[in-house]
Length: 187
Image (cartoon, rainbow, N blue to C red; front, side, top):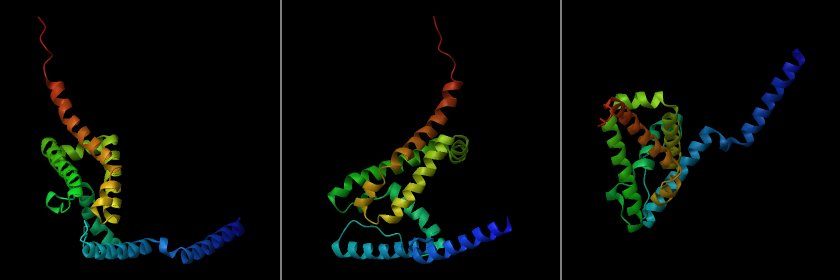
């Protein structure tokens, strides 16, 4: 038994050492360094070609840099391009969609209220799932696209989940009002 434990732990250590040296670019640090390089290159090419790119700021290739980029990337994926960023006619539909998403989100939060929204999210697993999926997907898309054209295509899978979560939140507010209404009078 002790021999098997030693054998498998030694085997695991050798396997880990070998794979980490061969696949070093697939570590978190390698991913972040590659993302910083791609961001720099896309920013440069967008400025040179007068494209429709966006900038998340200086990306530090560390876990802290990733956490700092999280709200910016989610904002980009869900609520941008803003109408004044639509410098080309082809970006206008995407700007209208982003403006609708922003206005709809603000409407839901003001209609439902911040505390009731948080309570409803954590009390309903469907809303929680939809929001977690949409926000993580939006982060991934916003963090890696750096171009409003690509962003418009890549964010399509997360928007239905986001809209469903918002509609379900509105429905949570509407149901208590309907339940409190007196039954209709019959003659």
